[in-house]
Length: 294
Image (cartoon, rainbow, N blue to C red; front, side, top):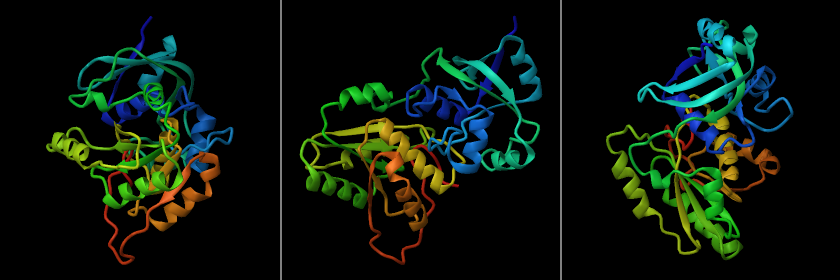
């Protein structure tokens, strides 16, 4: 029986890696129609769980017809030509016109004719990276590593680490309790020509005497999310990795900061804001770990 082998691009591989390593827990795979629609409208799954990313596997009509034959889809790295995961399909669906327009805001290639497949995803082969694999953790592996930390403060480096954000995280650890650690989540495009230098500089920059230990975690980036959704995704992934506190950098807009604070009980993290040094500072376009703000 023919099984669809679908080529996935760099951004699809990034979300797939985060799904497989546990960062998107408790989701086991791609969203069904009810969940997809609810996330687009409300930043929540159909059961009410807070979730900002419309994680959906898009198919052409021809791919959908082929996938229907076996109910299985093998996902293939377009550059490496390696089968990296398999989807056990639960359902195929298309979005209503008004929701298809919302989906197109995340990916211009998605139209009213786009089909989607929902289902559980299982890994077939490890997703390969050219360097710094010692800084790439699955959620279970990192949680095992930091299980004796009393608190874990997550701070973002995107791609550089703001010294004020780092200082605020260290102050929080110092003011609350001993035995806490710092989780620095790094979002750097590994295709960038200065990728290696950026990571080395970050390693040298991170110093926090109030932290029991410091962990650097290199994460893939997801494109197409606006600032609010991006910030929420960062916070939820940080929580999944074991963080108890989340530093909201001074580059985040006041509106996005207030929006995140409104949901802090559901997120289950201490939200730690950093005040901008100059109120009149010009807001710059910032690359975030996990996602790029649109």
